Image: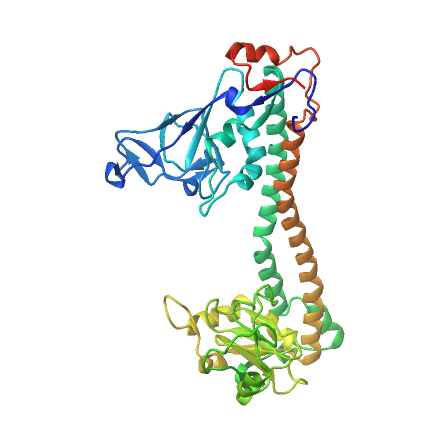
Amino acid sequence: MWPYEVPENWVWVKLGSVIELISGRDVATSLCNSDGTGIPYILGASNLDSDGFTVERWIENPVVVSRCGDVLLSVKGTIGKVYLQEEKEINISRQIMALRTLPVVETLFLRDFILHISDMLKEAGNGLIPGISREIILNYASPLPPLPEQHRIVARIESLFAKLDRAKELAQAALDRFETRKAAILHQAFTGALTAQWREKCGVNLDSWAEKALVSVYKFIDYRGKTPIKIDFGIPLVTAKNVKKGYIDYSISEFISAEEHGQRQSRGTPLKGDILFTTEAPLGNVALADLDNYAVAQRLICLQAKNTAEVSNPFVMYYMQTGMFQDKLSEQKTGSTVAGIKAAKLKLLTILTPTLPEQQEIVRLLDSLLEKEQRARELCEDVIGQVDLMKKAILARAFRGELGTGDVGDESAVGLLEDVGDHSGWRRI
């Protein structure tokens, strides 16, 4: 019984009846070189990519050689990486197999089919170090269309993939510009440009903006004791890993006991809405606390406003993401391998503070503008994520004969198998 129906002039074959399968073999390091003498030696999946490969070693006396036009497939460790070889010769290790077409199969058609089944090959891998055997590939059921149809299918796939790749490039380019656009919006906000009309309407002068040291408006709460004992459930422990640029990511969750939490509050109790700031790796990430009851870990400082009638935490959180503040931070950081800042130096860094009503207006405008940017960012990420899924769907339809490329005038692919002289591996639906 074959996996699914295909057009009348297609046939099902075992892959081994239409390809030659070459298994790689490992070569001793002593027989290789790194100066480019001989031909490239591919060690494994880490060297392969869809549009090329990286070379770490060369070999003068090759052991197992793949050649231009072979479809290289990683079969051990990381299974399912595919590369259509363009180079004249490559020496392949045992982590790689080369699929070489017989005249009945178009090379790009084979490459696309292997891409189509790569996920299924991964599932077939077994053992502590995943791997697939020659038998799995040789006995894999493959639909075989007539050669003209193979060419049309490849052309259709390439056309559709090119459009998807272009959409992905545009989405990625827009995504790459997100931080630049955000920085520009923040710059407008904290140079007064964003609220120029508001000040004119309210009769407020830009001279009302004042520069203040953080320590003058904030109480600093941190923890410098021993690493707490983690438990499965309890008081959330917010760490530097959780604090991103403007938000808190709880994909990594840690907890401590209520007793230990109580012992950690000698420096103060972190509150919901306080500013959380990373003092090391990554330095300078800032977000607002969004939990009612939590603890802060090392490498994280909680800034608690001394007077909420003087300063808006969301305003300061936004300000601390600007280039003007991050530049000040960079000037005071210590350490070359792991950059950090001492609490004493952080306290002396300054922020610009307009009147509280203007702070609140800036926050309102930034919330609105950056929310739109975030929605655009999520849309771009969704497009990028969907491209691979759409490619898989196109490949699935291609190998069912559902891309609209069929021609009833094509001779049956049965004739192709007569050319290779082995009928044992195929059967017509």
